[in-house]
Length: 267
Image (cartoon, rainbow, N blue to C red; front, side, top):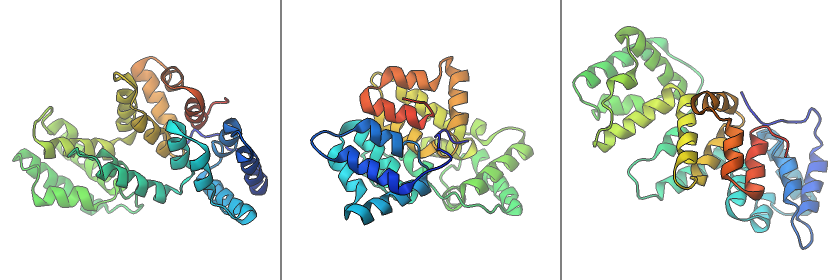
């Protein structure tokens, strides 16, 4: 479930005017910006951008880029974009990295809706045969993992567990130096149980020496309208601390207020 707290009644025109007022003059009212955009869903944010441009002949995204800075600007920029545009920005940034692993590309992959159970069952068998023979990077594995939607892959992994009596992740060797195998493990974990996967990403981003703001921002911004509530609950159970408290401790200023707002808090 989502964590953002959207008001029952919203005036798009009033929101656009409030944002203009927050950016007008010498100082920027960051709290006013968070109060509006941090509590609006994707459809409302899109309407606010359209209304702002109609009223002031200016792109709201570009205005906020000029007014804000640092991690707060990055979080707000990614939040206000349409989800598809945000995914494109995340993918572009990920591909510029020198690392061979690109988990972000997995996180934003095709969602889809339809599930073919017969196909899922047959491909679960194909995956089992390939993994049993240690053929992790054969054509069948690559085809299945890269061409199926997330729901279709989840169905495939469920059939795998039913047929083999163990999850697919248990059958993939751990701590391997094989880069493809490590990428495959990340991919399977993300598709198989996104809540567990994103909880781990958050935990690693906060517990490392120096907070990984990119990962922290990415997860909260991209999951706030999907399953962040479940991720928060799992984080608390596994770490004996609320995610909200961990974010409050590890971040500062307007950036902290933005993340806490997306987590469902009053700031």
